[in-house]
Image (tube, rainbow, N blue to C red; front, side, top):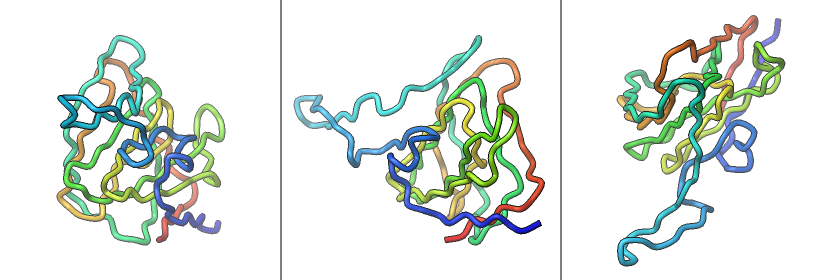
Length: 167
């Protein structure tokens, strides 16, 4: 089998729209609050939490630096809730996502890779196939907003063939 090659593209709201939302100020409307000392970029993302669950904020500290090119061998999804990653140190990070081939697996020919500019976070909609956190520097801290609740909420799909992510 041949290796599938995926080129990294800049993260934009338009390109990322099939998978979720880009979290950031650029290109979004705001209004002033706090006696015009603050610009509020309101409701950029609506979180999802299905079943008996709530939404919580955690910190993920990635302790492994990702080297490019990168071969990946799996994707995961969270069918019962969205998951947002917001860099806390202004660091760039790599986002790998895929469209679904069917209800059980991603389409490996529809894998996309994006690079955050460090001022952008992402929100994966519930059920979006994605790779776990990949950072270009470590340690890297991320505020993560996701579903906290009981029941299985992580499907993992191991690839039958390799996928290479290249700059």
